Length: 272
Ligand SMILES: NC(=O)c1ccc[n+]([C@@H]2O[C@H](COP(=O)([O-])OP(=O)(O)OC[C@H]3O[C@@H](n4cnc5c(N)ncnc54)[C@H](OP(=O)(O)O)[C@@H]3O)[C@@H](O)[C@H]2O)c1
Image 1 (cartoon, rainbow, N blue to C red):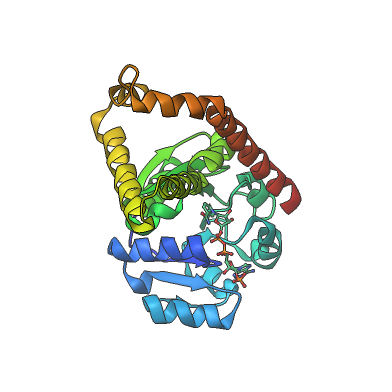
Image 2 (image 1 turned 90 degrees about the vertical axis):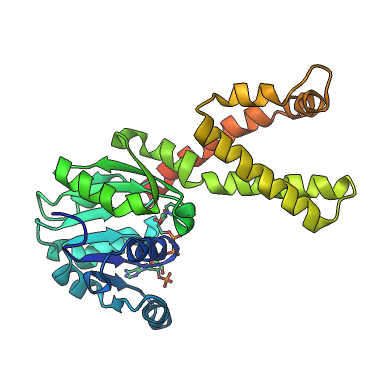
């Protein structure tokens, strides 16, 4: 199996499924090698109008595609697999984008021997800056992982992790963009508190976030070092940091990510 030469069906093309479709198209994947499925006719029409992609029912997708990328909500996965599971020939590759669900959830509902790969991507896929973590489930070979990587590489960075780390990945990078947006939103509010016009505060913080992110990526320096470079003795930054520490921002992040990890586990338990 190699990229672009077989058909990929995005099963349940909602927000994440659409990110995948649009990313594959941007990377040059032929539109006639893509299929999508949707629950609502209006959604199907929207996808065809936007991408020219053929939207079919789930069983047709199973029939025609070599790779089935499942991107329904975790709580909808069992019903979907009740419908398609027994009909999936064991030579198809199933890629799950569902948060929390272990590959064993799929394997139990698919014919013996069906390869399953678990993927956690994130919304910056929209601007080709996703972080996608890929894990092999039962029967997935190196070739299957390579194919999944080839599909997600055009959307940003990819990393292979053992499946046991996927709930932590979900908490960190899957939900991660939301934490940064919250931080930016709060900093814009702080700018308004200090008397800046909203638009000025927005521009200042968004560019500061971008600049800091590029420094983190390109300098190779540890974040502590980068922070220390902005923190002069008895200066303004250390006064702010004292407040952040006093208000437990670091502890809040540790607790928040633990809660996200636990929620991923709960979703898997509820889906079963
Ligand atoms: N959003 C994120 O940032 C993010 C990040 C990483 C991973 N994920 C994972 O990605 C998955 C999808 O999340 P999402 O935010 O994209 O959800 P979403 O927008 O609700 O997309 C799921 C889509 O699947 C459709 N669907 C459900 N059951 C179906 C079925 N039996 N047949 C065909 N279509 C069906 C839904 O139809 P309706 O429109 O009728 O509901 C919906 O359009 C989740 O498992 C989530 O854990 C999400």
